[in-house]
Image (cartoon, rainbow, N blue to C red):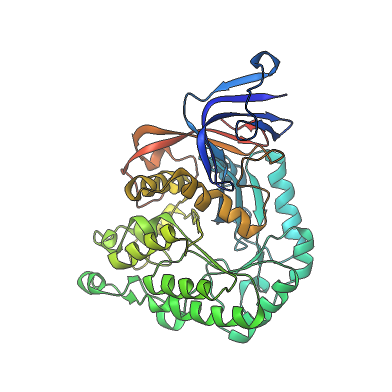
Length: 426
């Protein structure tokens, strides 16, 4: 059963190590590595020897924000295809939002989805429980029972809780179960029925603009409630410079605040909407160039803890409409790794920093046994050829949803291998 990965460039973000070496996987866990052993094992004693040829080998990526269309909209994307697409891009663990049909707001739903996912033997799937029943923001869901069923946190999906008292109660109860509250920050009184980011571009295009402060106002409120309740609070897909500043200050005070962002918010700005391409209609919307630069700075200095794919499968018919009528969202799984690698190349991130943002940090936030190359750790691994150049073509996506603002973008660096529990997914 033992496999030897030789001639690899190993990256362990937990120990902040990045160097050439080897590792051994046996019965689904890492049993030996050159980080801890000086003498490599006899190749003849291995059931399989994988020559990595100098490629990067690190802990599999942990995607902490994925929308599943299954159950409820399997015609857009099935659970099987979702998990396949994840592993084809080195994502070995992913957490799905509760905004399915029916909503994941009870233990039975979590049990059902986790059982189905386990049968596919692909990426490890985890569920957020809905913070409120039917995600209506009016009555708290069964947090305790969902925790017992395996909920790794409580989320509002793409909805924001406007009732401050409800958010306070949610944080208080989530804290009792030691689960994070994952919130989409949006003041709907400032953003509802709006098309894109507020500013000169929106005015020029004749579109209704949403101010970036719609995100930051709710974020500031939530941080004050987190201070009051002591809850673990996580801000999802941060997009605005002011939000980065608020999180930075909260962390400096020692509050238990974490945050993620997604590739569109550090690679694109509002000018991507100039051609009325509905693939660039996202929620939160693409912001200004100053916001984009602030998001990158937040990733570089640790203010923003993680990168998530923010995968949102959309029916093509709902996108093939005039911009104001088109649905928000785009496919994220197939661009998650390429765009993050481009960020590394353009801003001199180390491999340790990149794997921290995409593997160790999201695993730590969610309490998952992932994100490290250590003896006894699950053999969830990704292999990357950093020199493989290609053009991203949406028609070649592994996910069933192929809508993206990145279609036709050139990239360098490609996932060439993925193992979940030591099992090869390619």
